[in-house]
Length: 372
Image 1 (cartoon, one colour):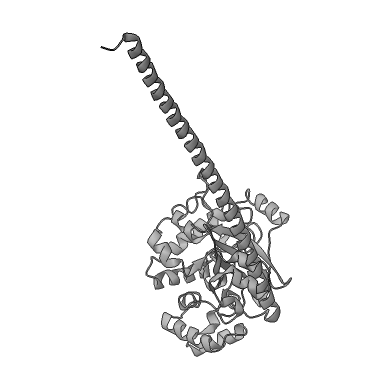
Image 2 (image 1 turned 90 degrees about the horizontal axis):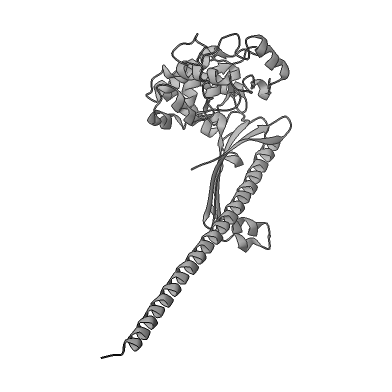
């Protein structure tokens, strides 16, 4: 039988060992947690650095694209057609390949960076902003001719044509709350007329607090004369904004997306780049088969001016006497630039709307939107 004191000492020694093991385990847990948090923080900083670098690369690619648009405007200021340099998309390419072509000594640093993108003619689509006109400063009116064109486009795509008027009412109601509601642009002979001055604003206030004397609605498509709604309508700024218009579904919007857009100002349609559906919609009395024949002829020789367009329409069997030549054009001022940058773990997928001023030979960024 063991002595009690010796047994007590062994018991205390066992407790001390267990306590030491617990302290070591707790310390290991704390240290591993600290190391893990440090690793996560380092990873987060690296991701931020990579994303910042990808954003700068995307910005550089955008500047390069704007240079292409400016240089092409210098060589051919009156015509924009699909065969131009701007119409050639860039497949997924290493950044080091671009840098190596210009003799950059650090070109190999871009071996893990890839660029791709394309330029899209925004005026090849039907501009929903055209549904609302500004005949005089401070007054917004619905454009009946453009509503008829949009109805034809909806019918061609198998959608309800009555959505055209509802869309126009929604756009007009949204513009009534916008600071740029009086901004317009005419395309006759490629001239720009932008009206967004203090006099316009004062005229709007004089006619009813910026609402055009009660000509607007906050309840589009339901009560056109009711302007007492406490809820201001959302402004239509993109095709996705049509989800706010009663009657549109996500499926209908996806069907419309290749053929419509929303630009800051009213614009004409570039007949050198428009699709057959858009051509058939904007030209009264033209069916889809005639528009397809018109586009097929355009692929052989592009149109140099609106006169060539009218001759081609006449050749396609369309009466041009009822067509407003101001709605047609052969040059473009608005372009969508779609760019994608893959920089190691960082990815930037971005769409930028560019305005090209043919008078000053400059380009301006209208907006930049990151794609999900």
